[in-house]
Image 1 (tube, rainbow, N blue to C red):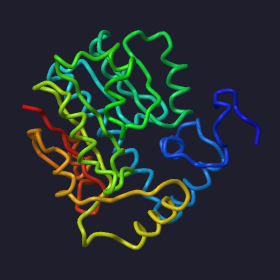
Image 2: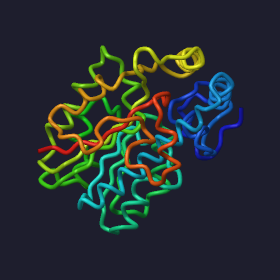
Image 3: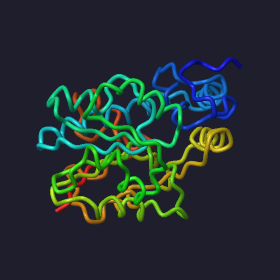
Length: 270
């Protein structure tokens, strides 16, 4: 396979990645044949999955706009992925050109492409790191350059924590970031999941394909996701299905039924 000029030399083009599969589902162009193959095979089992992914992305935009309306101008986007239209810095800096963003991802393609696109933006930094290493992320030069933790910071974990297994303690990972935040800061989370009695055969098969082809996912219910917000006061309406969090139109609410395989919430640190 010919290596595109935007692909770092040290990545395996035959190994699918979370960021690049997600990029394909979002309609992006920074993915390889191996990513497209597993993404398409998953869609064959669960065709609605692309709409699910787009709903997580839409929640990100709604959450950032909500946070801007509450005066937040600093954003730490963990597991940020490959830049697409409507990224955090575009929304935030349209409201305030001085808004600051740090993007963090473990995928070298996501990081390389982000750095290339944002090289001239002094208020945005891109960090290549594993978000589970919260101490390393928070101690990085990129975070120190952009974020003042004496002021409110919004930590964004969008479609991220379902890639952190229970034994890797996602609640502890969130707690590491939470403890660095000043009062008035926020945590935004969207997460794949459903209640225990809701798993369909299509969901099960799609998850098995993804687990084998890309990486393991851990679906969680609303109670487990609520635990991620220990130390935060949940913003109304609390932990709800992704489309039901501050929908932009009545049509969005129609998608918020009990069958949607994911939850979202925003919390404020007191």
